[in-house]
Image (cartoon, rainbow, N blue to C red; front, top):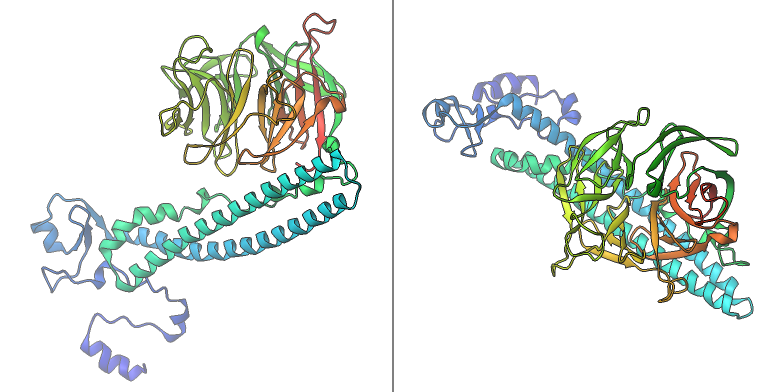
Length: 514
């Protein structure tokens, strides 16, 4: 409008008109005029609204507050403006996030095309060679990897779609609120929407390292993959059995021998081991808490905190009473996962066997104990790890001889996979005896067993490959840990009665294609 219309028409016919300079229109937020003062009271037409009565779910004027809504709970204009600003920002962020997810979809399609090309090339190389039993196994392994990768990529596509739908819901509802200026809908939907707009809690849908080509580790001239691991350094300790192995942020390591009730804090000097501290404590699990404390499971109803300088043990906030902890794990999003059992002998499993998830304050988020048919998930939950897609992996011992399996729990708490060892290395006479779980940076899971094999699973528990550690000179392997330098640690045990009974080996390995 021109200046004449502004002064002679709009100001004359209504005092409620809002005048905006034409140069500011491009910056105008469509929700900017969504304020209490723009709404007249339904009961008192000459009054503008000043608050929202959350008790009655309606906007009210000052007269309503004094006469009808006395003592009710209100949202004043200052709080409303704060919520509105937060929601408008959520709308903008949702639009931005959808653009990012669309770009991720495009990258994922290119990854799939590249994987298909690599697979076809590897398959062609095998077919061009003479047909042998080894080639038959190589082709079978190649097909298994192809299927595993396709499933992983399809799952990522579904994750992307689900995330986009979540953000689009935020956009749609905020658009409706802006258009119709519906205060009731705003306050009813706000809490749900602001949770949906909490982008910091939403993990990245795609991380390139999770989709590192597993075909690249296939040497078409030697497809047994024994060269995926290489010994970088070897150390000798003064304990018999390295049941737990954990590297701390200062690059020192905690190693334990449960049978001897020993914990050592060590560091490396070239190829030798220096013991910094030695404590006489029997523990069943170690993990670093969200606050940086060293959490230990002592088989009690409450996890303890270990002071690695003094050896002092104090109570933590994490308790599973009346159960007793078996092992612990801390996820990347700072949940504490505890394997627990009822008091009494480990076998036979006549009482409760549970895996419990807690928040950083020690509040139970979920306990995993029975399936929909009330059948127990676990016999004896031991080593635990987790993946970025929310799955939890648990070594479940089935008897006193160590026979076991790996149980994979999905985000919903149901069992989505059970790995009982590969048929080539798991027989009735020599059953699968898993010991330790470790999540790699790629999202793959390594499982150690008592037969010197490392089993590689994807982040849903499906088999990828296995490796015989005897091929690189490692025997009696047990515990696993990742180093800050990007290497793999393997802690071993000693054979009873040998001359080196208390000189368990610790290996630092380079690894490829995992």
